Length: 301
Ligand SMILES: NC(=O)c1ccc[n+]([C@@H]2O[C@H](COP(=O)([O-])OP(=O)(O)OC[C@H]3O[C@@H](n4cnc5c(N)ncnc54)[C@H](OP(=O)(O)O)[C@@H]3O)[C@@H](O)[C@H]2O)c1
Image (cartoon, rainbow, N blue to C red; front, side, top):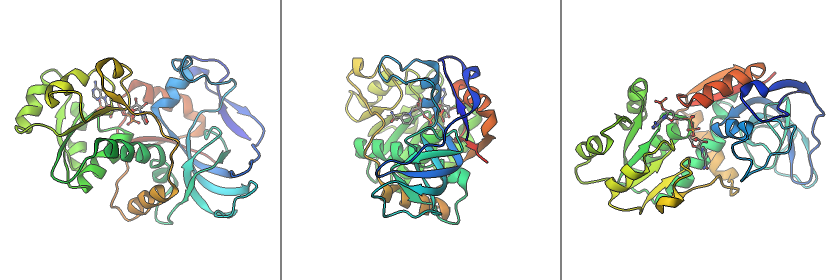
């Protein structure tokens, strides 16, 4: 099968097409004919080698942690999914490929296309996990740093659906985008503390840092301490006594199915930029640059 592979760590140029074996599903796994692969900032961090000390990757490797596609083979013990089912979920083998294995998948509603479906697993799970960790409830004000990307697009909508007010940062080009999602938008430039204090004179109840670009000290100032601040991207968090939330293995088919239903009926909006599989290097270059609006996806086949 056709796949995108890297056999050394480095810039996006290390990604190349290769013909590799079709993977065989083990117990509890399904094999999916991939229609769309989700591209995550993590893919570039793995490819660059920057995570080798904490999360080694055996080479050669196929990138990609999520997929949408059609089930084409079942491993031993799988009874809740049939061959031919249209699904979205997390991939156990790299999803930048024609076929990948998966353990946790949810049905794709007919009204949701492949590209918008694949915007949900990683970003949806991350957004829900952190909002739960922060304990965001109706009537509260949440500050989100860097909310115009894949996770932020969902986090803003899920927090406002809980009845919270969201103050969110992005660059100048994404202010209207954040407003369209339901947030009060501001830029992430110097003077952030003063701007947020003007927007929320009674203070912010929780802070969700999605950017990892040095906003934690300002967050402590705004919160008056480290309580109810969570980052998913700032590796300096623990030094400051702030919670870093890691990717979770507690993946819920039911929650993913519910997000997919909401997306299918327009209750949850995703914004997608798609590249064909053979332009994976270009797509990762765009991701590495760090100014993606919504989700980058690769279309396969
Ligand atoms: N720990 C976990 O469980 C977990 C899970 C998923 C993702 N992540 C990490 O979380 C981060 C966000 O993921 P994502 O997929 O949403 O990323 P993304 O789609 O690449 O979004 C990045 C966003 O950051 C904004 N940004 C850039 N520079 C900024 C700055 N100086 N201050 C504030 N915001 C800035 C950008 O806004 P503008 O374009 O407007 O500049 C862009 O919208 C990534 O680092 C990713 O690896 C962690």
